[in-house]
Length: 380
Image 1: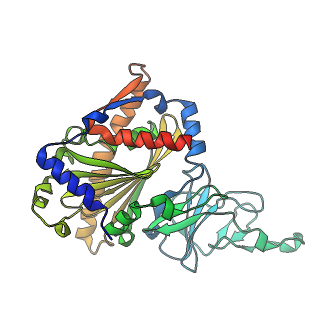
Image 2: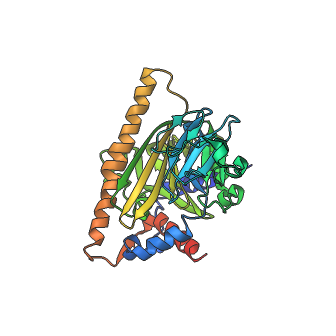
């Protein structure tokens, strides 16, 4: 099977050698109203975020039987669990007696069962109702009919995928298409959860997606952090179904010019990033990976989740310190202080009415790809 990363990386090499960077004919404009209009967000929530496949975490976040956590970012209160059979499941976070929330907080908990705080109905990690206090007072109760309401859930490539619609489907073969080959090639299912941050930013969710599809800003906005590691505007972006595959050339890219394809290193010579539509950016750094997911809260507010994965559990204090430093640099130095900062500033700038449209230049072609896909999906 051909590695789908080869073609786009080969194109990056050719374009970098020839100085043919940027797709000038694809420059255009994007209406600013899509970033602050209530009706636009309502349409996005109804047509995109209510019934689709979403990455909600990595399977190593739930390591053992009894591990479970609440997940509230998709407009539905959800519980993720790992049961005795090792399977990860997703349920609506609502007791089947009086609808009370079973699990609070987004940290992982480990218990043999989930107990409703109201009347102490208890559920196993497989969602089955296992205990009802004073059960004789419910003479017609069939506990097998009162299991937690399940959601479509599957582990694929190490990621936990959930559809928040209980009546929806989860056809990952069709949904991911060729991108599955990329994720398999990167071996991300063998990586392990290291750390997560959750924060709310005063910006539209699409502005954050835009920031990670734009190679134009890397040497400028990130000039004091990661910018010096990359070649200016050496990037290629391609749509792949509803998803986007992009690659940015690192300073080491020249080493690959004369190498045979089997010696190309897709973490050393470049950085691959993927938009898993609609809301997750996967970034494959040299020795760790980032899962950046954005969830709209309001037209000008977004919940951002950043999960860091490492190749293995830190073997010693030195390795732990290395990954702590790496996470701090990318999370606080790059994402927080630079990317999220300018997104929030852009959101403020829109309120002035200075721009009815944003200009999209030839080095920002990834933005146009994303917004074209978004339009198509909203019409579907």
